Length: 301
Image (cartoon, helix red, strand yellow):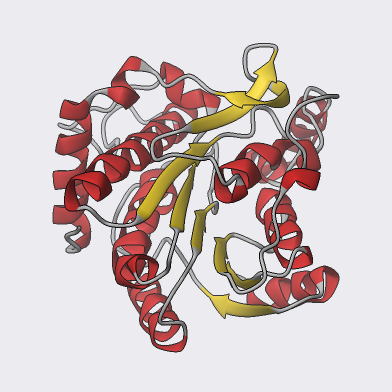
């Protein structure tokens, strides 16, 4: 398979990288590749025991810190301690995510779980760390999208999906919101003249632990469905390449979006991915940003 590979990642010595959801799947691969090339990597994880095991597997210069993106209190505590310990941050990878296909659930703050974790938690985290990112020489924020964003629509009269809840649709909406956030962040960073790049990536259909967890509410049948679904996925090492390129390729500009280039962006070598019209709409970006500020109480830049 040709195209961009991890061999093209430049030396990362002297850089501090934060990877949310780094104890497994795409986050683990991303953190490991960064650490192996010399970065000091902060594994931001909900389960610190799993994070410590991941740190042992990765080696290099890594540290484990607790972060639950489904709790704004946890996000604030994590960001305050990290900002004090690392005045300059070179990279923030907003990789953590959740997909649960059972009944509607909410975060500690009462947000619909998918939107609250996948978008609002990362929105708050990015805002709280923006000063540290701006203090670095060439900092980046990488937000993790999904091909599901292409068929989703944001209903601003029902952002928390309280009417006619369907989990798969709620997940797609959360990933559309994440994509809109990454693009709107780029617009705002450039308008403010801040030296931070906002880029995006999606992994196509990739073999991670999210698929089994998504179906856990269905018991034995769910495990069977998840196993069959995994047959259509690509290895996690391949799926992590778009976000690694977004994070490390020296030529990446703000607003660029990377994903797999084959079979409807589900697999294959890294290429430029396509945004849905709604994701690229500045009006949608402005409206979502205002909603996120109101919901989280965090305003920036």
